[in-house]
Amino acid sequence: MDENPYLHSRRALHLRFDIPILKTKEFWDMLRQGKLVTTKCLKCGNVSFPPQADCPKCMGSESEWVDLGTDATLVTFTHVKITPASFAEDGTYTIAIAQLKSGLKVLAWLEGVGAETVKPGMGLRIEARAGTGGSPYYVFVPA
Ligand SMILES: [Zn+2]
Image (tube, rainbow, N blue to C red; front, side):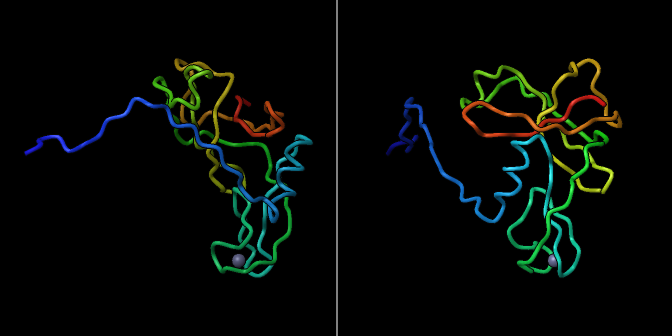
């Protein structure tokens, strides 16, 4: 009887996927212009981030775009030293969760601060970045 019923493969898997963004296209368009916006439900007033096509609180599908704000406070972070294959070319990096003035907590990469100086409670700012290949993204940087 086989003690190890697994097939091990050393093949690298490459995934390519398209994410439909029709109902959140405004977010991506604004991000390309360097602005961060998100959705506010017109039915219950819930503000979500990332922007949601439908409100996760009341399931309403009517929303308006509101400014996300840029000032944040670092809640927690982790330094990623062993990177997944898809981020191997980026080297080590830091992922942070920070709370915006609105109370929303946002997950993003943290740039511009070394492992020895990053501390929960420090002031951060969220910024839009152009990205390579036309895909904009956002990061935290020290305030
Ligand atoms: Zn709602």
